[in-house]
Image (cartoon, rainbow, N blue to C red):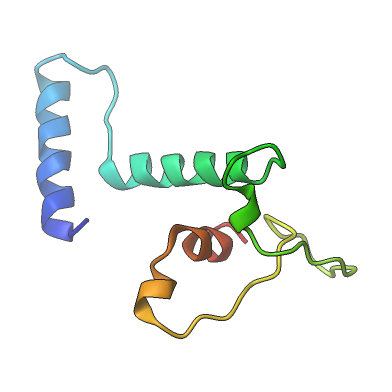
Length: 93
């Protein structure tokens, strides 16, 4: 989503809060990030239908803790860079 669209939706959420339709302040970017993190955590389970799309597990002693144990694939195109799997692998490291 563009920054302009995020601003418009955030303004709607602020109006909802002001008129009493919601009890806490919502933010579009926080909602999207939480949804992405939830889906990625569900994908990590072997019984999930999208689990086969994840790269193989990287089995090496690590010097520091990471958010997941998958290998980080290389990418070279903008379309590939914008895919949900790559975005999640690099965001939740």
